[in-house]
Length: 222
Ligand code: C5P
Image (cartoon, rainbow, N blue to C red):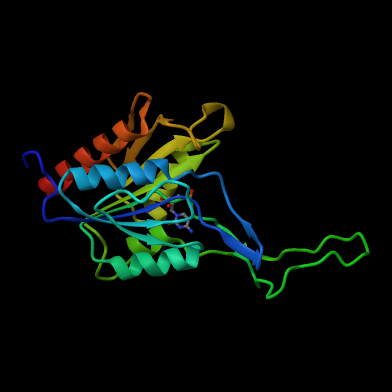
């Protein structure tokens, strides 16, 4: 407790999008900025924790005093996360691509002159949160996931809580009109086995500080 409630604790955070290569010059990506994940890493450090931040490609600077591991693809993110365990708290804020191209082209794919576009075969990526949630011996005491949705926010979040064995899912509506993805503010709903809490719109830094304060409390309580 006190002003450094996470002193002596290791907090592992994922942030940003992943890039899934198509060929040496192209990739599949998403609109995640990494702002919320990076803010969580800073807040955890300010609460006294040792912090590991596994970040996909973002334009944000590395936060000071934090061990940052830079990755591009979901597979590399999973490896970095597994290699960073054990952790007391893990917060998976990255917007991991659900799919990658089944076989990455060794050379740049060229138009073949027929006017027929190439078909990209996709394959599912490993689920990092679920892998950590089901870890036989290194599951963090508190495991938090995010759920960015454009519909059925709470039902989807509850499903993820169970399937991925998370303790909390931070659900947010990323429909374009909310401005959340890439923006500075966030409106979240905290879904746990105790129910759903609606938080008012806040700056992503404030959201991060409150999630970290809540996480420190939860660790202290069990
Ligand atoms: O299923 P969905 O992608 O919406 O789940 C979101 C949560 O799961 C986030 O916490 C995200 O970081 C995590 N996730 C993951 N690995 C994936 C897909 C999602 O860790 N391949």
